[in-house]
Image 1 (tube, helix red, strand yellow):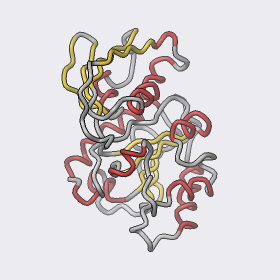
Image 2: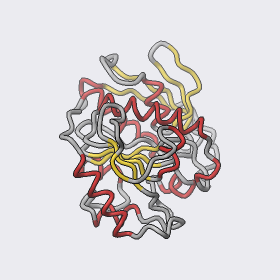
Image 3: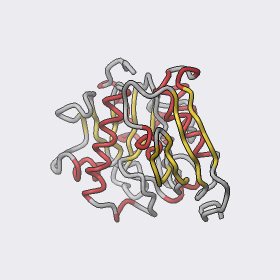
Image 4: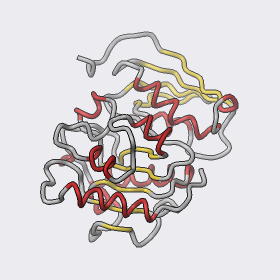
Length: 249
């Protein structure tokens, strides 16, 4: 039962931006690998050198990587691995895919859209967005496609998420976009965008940028959204790619 808390000694972990391709922008992917390699409930003590010149603070990036931050002290973040997904983001993204929140199935699988009836990966391959399904680290490194969620809290489904959670999450994702400058941010599922940004939103290009970059809102890829066909979903992803500007991160 991998989601049960475990008792272990605190694991020290240090990120050296000077020795990492992409510098500080390589921290989220490094944290994602740490999270995937850490049992749920295990404690970590994260530090990073040198201090970042730009971007969110270390504690926000640690939280975005799927850890519950417990203490921040002089450049060190003490945290505990949560039962959720990390952000798979970095420099040079042509697209940043933002879901509503991880399902428990996805959290345990280690990648988003892991449910048996979710069509995201099949339509993403069909649309030419990714080449290898169910591998977010490969999508980031090989296809320039990052992945995050508006809400980090994993649930059986998104029905219990609140407007306040969506609003807080939208602010966090906007800071990521401002920092990493993906070509486009694609919101999969209208519920979060409607709760946090525009309650009258319809699928398609957003009328204003998000975090300074183009945004696109598309229907959910969940099997519960049977009224939207796989061909339509793939068409939305192609439309988002057409909207993308060359990434600068």
